[in-house]
Length: 102
Image (cartoon, rainbow, N blue to C red; front, side, top):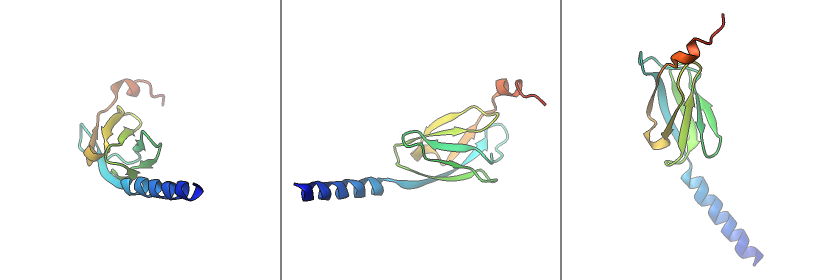
């Protein structure tokens, strides 16, 4: 019985590992089409996260059906499916810009 459980456990872990893949894409400003460096991409189901580099490119481990939450200071957060996340456009959050103190 214990051996059967161990075999089942190993098999299920292999299946889960195979379902994960590296999802990559680019985050741009919707207004200017300029890359957004420092944006955070979080996999909603697992909490895995990554940040974009200076050219707006990111890579994160997720399944094709996972939802990604993309946030950046001064922009409206977006949620997209990972399989549709090759290019993500973020709109400026004009409300948050009024709250900035210099």
